[in-house]
Image 1 (spheres, one colour):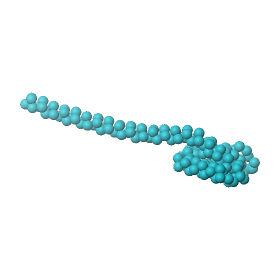
Image 2: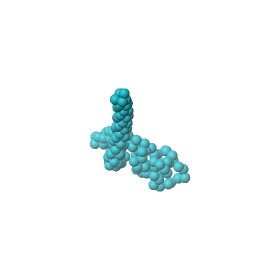
Image 3: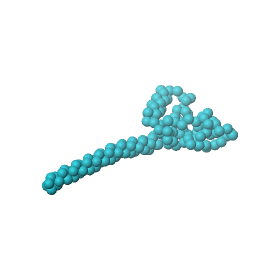
Image 4: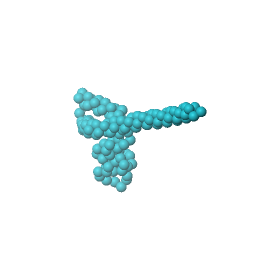
Length: 148
């Protein structure tokens, strides 16, 4: 009977080891899935940060195009129509990539998104925009510079 008990014990030990291995495999698989999710999240965050750095370089170019249009409205010509088209196209590309221009003139001053350059009235309403401000996916890249 001793040999039979040894076999039964051995079988029970094998079942126990099998359960341990199965549970270990399940934990490892869960850890792997968590790592995949975390890696995807970090990759997405990295891409957003890379986009932010790229947009910070491009936004001054867009600002200068808008400024050139503003100062050349008196002169109408084919070249001006071309610049208007390029500016509109640039704006569309920025918007498609999560960039929004901060609203200014006529809006109430908000220190989170506006920077006051000069205060000409006691009211808290923006009367002029000195430099446009932008947000990327809701995060302020740089505030709009305004006059109250």
